[in-house]
Image (cartoon, rainbow, N blue to C red; front, side, top):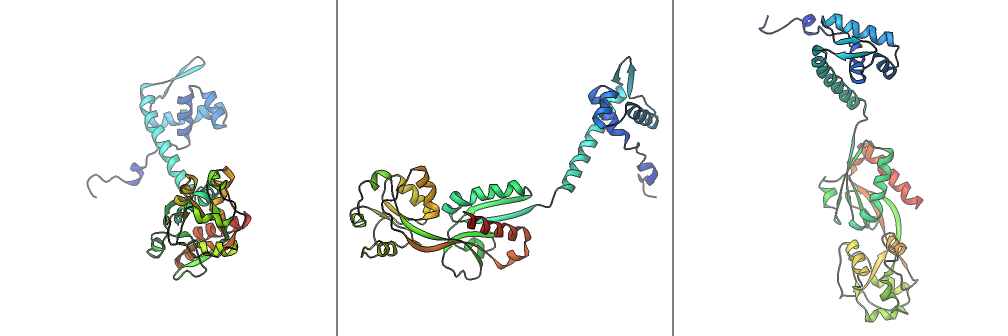
Length: 298
């Protein structure tokens, strides 16, 4: 037999485990009666369990006084160990009972992420607290193609090479600007004398045609790769931005931006995109389907 090895019977010479919660409750509450109420037992059952524990230990844990109890010195030492043990058991049990965590890495276009996605993530987590999210922003597909993200939200056409795609909503685009600048614009032709803010995925020429104006795509004016930055620039009065309705809607509702003209036109769409491997992740697929339903409901 190896040195220091003890037979199983000696190693597990534990007290009756059902006596420990009774002891801890009585010590914490200072009363067998209060412990009985807390544990939904009878006072005699609590008293019996503590007596059984004391017999097992060969030590008195409480001093019995008239209508009161007090821990002995041995009881105080034992309580520290019992309390720590019960706490560890409770934490370990809670961890095992908890549902398996689902971890989702999302890469979203900045404006859609802040103005639409964040509130949906919060709503999902209220019903699915086991889901852990990691959210980042990007406009390219690189994070998805490199396996750095499970799900992406992007603005574009129907073809997404190397990725699966689910359409969230089709967009209509129109000019927006600060209310002060909008008051100076009467017809689309007035745009000739103001600064036009540009985005590589939004076509001013397409909107001009819908508004009945024969203008080419502007080649001058600030170019923003981030629609959120372009929206803030428009709020600051830096010019007129062509913007997708979903992204402009919160600014219009708050009165921070105005639509100087009623004309709009169809454009690209917002999509959920993901590598094919996402089909093997049930949690990710459930979230994607929920996002699509949420988009259709708005």
